[in-house]
Image (cartoon, rainbow, N blue to C red; front, side, top):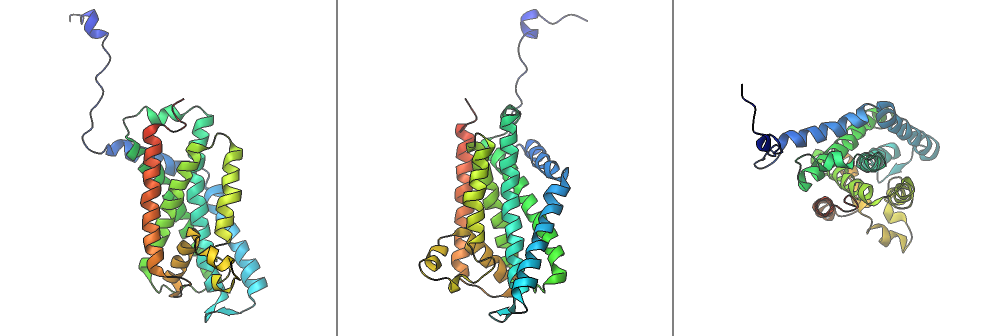
Length: 272
């Protein structure tokens, strides 16, 4: 067997050319994100359920006292908001922590080197984080059902707002993970933006009961429409216009997805 010419042997391998979507790479990134939170299931799946049950205990048993909200039992009113809280917080936590840990561990090159386009990176991280949010939401739903009767008045709304909220927070998590330079930055986003917007969105009360100007201000909080639409899916009762909520969810999902695409495409705080 003859040896290859030296000049030819020294040439680097020709990069693989993908036509269309790199489905294999996208699937690998997606399942990588799934395995991340499955490995620590006690923290990512069990802990949120315990938190939701504690909220149910405090607000329904201790505070609710058998009262109703617009003819709906207080437990039934609160439960969808608690489920949505877990969807929002866990979808955000998955994508943001994945990218921030990659930065600190010097692993960002592992995401940039494979033949994945910016769009595929945004979809892979976003879909993985949204999956965690939806899965935690399902587990929380099963956990609170013995304590609150949850009819399914509008199943389409449950699916639409649940998936929409998971994608929105997954994309926000990507943006925060790429922007943050240390864990303090991430804690600031969580404590001063995500948590206040979640608690001030009508999770435990009717926004219409708030005095002005807080009532009007609440209608500029996108989390309010997500929780209200999600609750509408279970109870058929809404505190706002469902049409506005549907449009706002679609616009936010597409807009934030585009921002994530731009951040990956320009190498925002990745290429130094």
